[in-house]
Image (tube, rainbow, N blue to C red):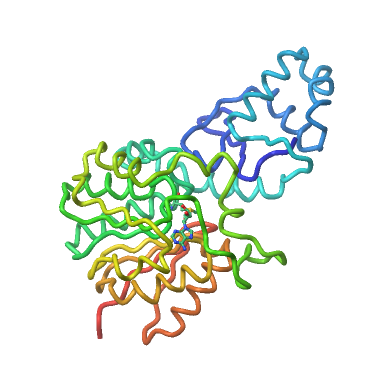
Length: 327
Ligand SMILES: C[S@@+](CC[C@H](N)C(=O)[O-])C[C@H]1O[C@@H](n2cnc3c(N)ncnc32)[C@H](O)[C@@H]1O
């Protein structure tokens, strides 16, 4: 049993809380005894030995210890694999603790983000960047559609739709490009984790096993329309972006969000879609800084432009920039 990457312990309002970065607003108040349990897990004690090991430390009997471990599994704080990942947990704690407190005061955002819980893989900071980007295009009447390549369960596009509704906008087209089958093209030589030797596919990087299920274009469409966005404005385009883009893409794009992780697809999206982003439009590249494919494709493409952009860091795995006005 090990702590999953992204599990964290933090202090909120003077109380110990436990959470996971995949659900940054779901914080589970914990008894200090739980920390003893986590420490024991971090030591690498095998799952079957834990109830025994915890008894003298916590006073829990075997049954209660097993129930507690069940809770921790359910909250995705621990997983049944050997090894420890405390170093990663510390990095994730830094990410979440620095992201959350100020966002708690934006009630419209918080309400929208809660509706997207379990539907997006992004951090609170990344969600807020998207929320703000929609505010930027709506507030400045920047023309064009909102486009996402790599949609998964549609949480980011649901958030974008909720942000548009928050600005009383219902006439923007939303384009969602995905295989809607949790599928990537085969990883190429440039794909992997930034800084790691081995090649990692987008699927491996993004996926705990249970996340792959429950996605269909129809479900995502329904989710967004049920939230109040007009159905005729939501276009789900199924297939590899290499086949569907640019053929099914809108002519003008106000907000482009790229999240297919890998080199080949990300470079294809930038080549075909960036020219359609209008001046002052926004581009968000997810996984920049985490996955070498998305990172390298972005660097390569931007280096070839006749202008330079301020590629601003959102979090450990995301960047955003505004397309400069034409000179
Ligand atoms: C990391 S997930 C997207 C996460 C989502 N944007 C969010 O906010 O949580 C990556 C998605 O990209 C899709 N994908 C990967 N490669 C693709 C390609 N070449 N064409 C279309 N979709 C692709 C996968 O099916 C998967 O749903």
